[in-house]
Picture 1 (cartoon, protein in one colour):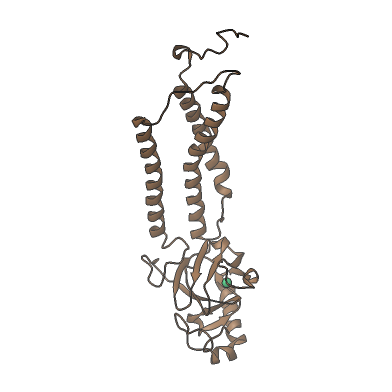
Picture 2 (cartoon, helix red, strand yellow):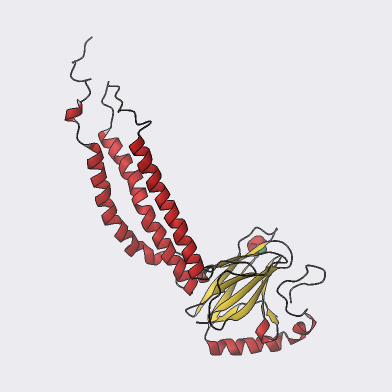
Length: 289
Ligand SMILES: [Cu+2]
């Protein structure tokens, strides 16, 4: 049995198209088309929405991440498709391309591009965190940057398995509801009375660990009237899954009316609560109101 010699012969180098150039051009064109499309079409619907200045900032950051990830994704997918089509092994042939191990140019390109991507994102993330006073995350008891102007302090007290909220500038009243005035910078003081919890107000773009004996500060400025979800996002015991409620962003006038209603409603409880403090000793000396 003899086969035709030409059938199993690999193409001579001169007959091969310039794969690098062809693939590179395909990837470049796809990137130039897809990246703006992804930014314009997907960007506005990225989480967590525009419920606060911090949430809007996170939408911008997610859009930047997506824009930077798109060329990388296209590189992988287009290369896969390209290889399936053009590097398919002909029947009966055992072909192999030239070895690329030890290719200094390829290694340098790879290291330079991946380092540039990762370092630029690290720089971008740090700048954004500082510029937005923690960008809705808990910044510990002494944040590096604090927004200027008046702030409404609200203490978030976590315990198994509910959050309560204390308003120190309104007589230290503590309520089971979180209501905030719109367009007002809020200074959240997140703490816990027992185990580690995490306060997560998704639509407001706020997430801050609630640790016992720690005053974890997060800043948020809600920008529209809304109802938002509050969840505990740290496994904190058997009823962790039940540790959620809803908060509201209302007009400043409605907030004034609501807070004075809370002060009246919980007047008796406020009297027996310990004075407002950044942290509290856990049980048995302190439980939520
Ligand atoms: Cu919890």
